[in-house]
Image 1 (cartoon, one colour):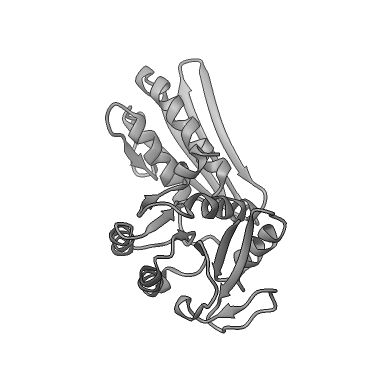
Image 2: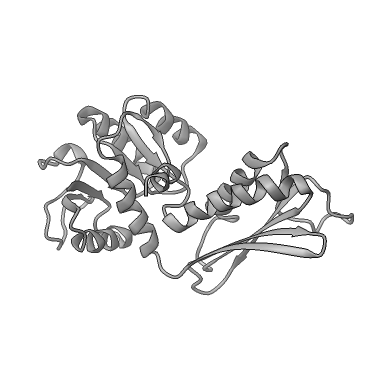
Length: 253
């Protein structure tokens, strides 16, 4: 039984995760954290981690990057493993997380979906074969009209996975409107579409002579991120200090 503290328990994803855990015989939310200290959930809710009285194995955070420093300090004080699901960390905050992971088990990924992290493995395997054969590589991502960043963090993570598998580094290109020339070989095109209520779609194209191979992931609801967060919590509980990703959790599925 993995005992979980849910930070951000009153938010949308906090409620999604609580519902998922409620149906999971191998996990339990023993406490929640919300700035108000109030909730209608069937577990105690506190304003901060240091106020929590219950014993837990891991904390899932679905709040704001603005609250990172406080979380890291409180977690280190009681050696609480952290699953960080928030996005939008600054470079300085990423370094702060890396530093804390020397003393604390921390799992952080650009996308918590198990499916997306399997896709990353597929993309790497395809790149190892097709990249050396000269296939052009393009990424197209689609999200709802309210999404603030473009391209998505997941699209960039896919591009990074591709680049790691290539024999030499390719350049990321986000806009070709300002140039009139043939497509250079060593580039990865990344395009973003925003509209409606699209939860998330990512398509990777390997375009060769006379054939195209496409790898795609489609998210139909945000519940997939909650399922991934719970899987990550189970994976991280009891681990040694270090910085982990969902790729590590996928490896033990």
